[in-house]
Length: 400
Figure 1 (tube, rainbow, N blue to C red):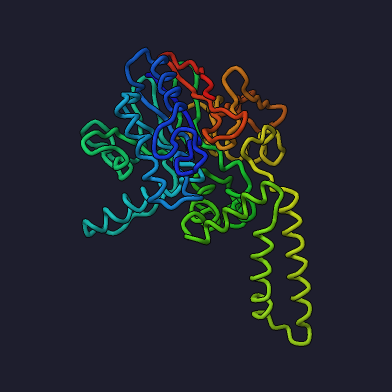
Figure 2: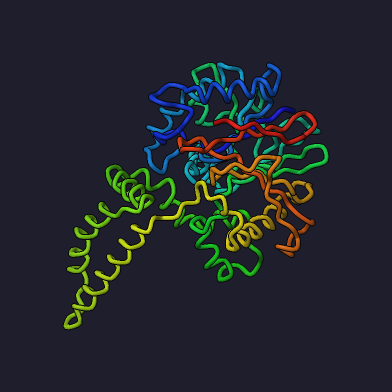
């Protein structure tokens, strides 16, 4: 098999390098030429999109999908791949949610059957010995795709469709001599596992599973991730506040708080102690503005993200749960892990090593972390296209 892996395309974000003004860019051409050179002409067996391919956090669903169509049509027309594996990230996780609704609720109720429980996660296995993708628990069908059609195939032209299989959040690749794990990486960030870190030991006495890492955090992640982009003009307001805060400015936030605080103050009636809520609200405003003016830290382009102690401990939780998942597939623990999310490339010749000395609970002596970078327009930033060749050897090429 020949496989290519990229992440963080962010179709729908105006900063996306691959599409501008509805047309593909020279950056797309460079990516296409690199992939064609890797395969020698024939299409990839699998093209893996490792999270945040679509961006619903700052864009409505319909807009991002419309913007994305030229990219997917070109993959087919340029004969880049036989199949696509789509791994949702935090900015397009609603793609996975839609799969859950389509397969477990809509289709079953349309057949007058009781709806099924949501799976919450769907692991995938690419086995070099078998030469195809397996989705455990999913029924196979005939046709060019082993698992039938899903709505994402509507991103292609009619009658010119590539099979798309959706895996969330972990894809395992069993190659000769190596077991790889491909995952977006948002579960290593506090915002996406906050509730499980606080409440997992309250509701469960066992170690948290991959399913629980997803399920426990749904109340919060559904709101702060893709849900934020679906609130019309409120979404635009949130986006403006966020962009200003990244630059250390707080003008819009200050105006919003000046409007909201008097309304909140009227809603709170403490009688003779009513002055207290006014004082507290003023302190909260002062604190919020101070935080914004300092500049909000961002995981994107954070070269030291994987070095942080809190991230290392979340990695351990995620890794142990992933090893349990791998064991259920008959695999050894993965020791080469490909992430996205941070937009900061870590190519095969410069991975990050985590040793047993650093994290004694690791099952093996060490694991290697790689990162595919991102495709947004940022000065001095680039993306990495990762490849696995017929022998399962990992390599990459940098695209500016």
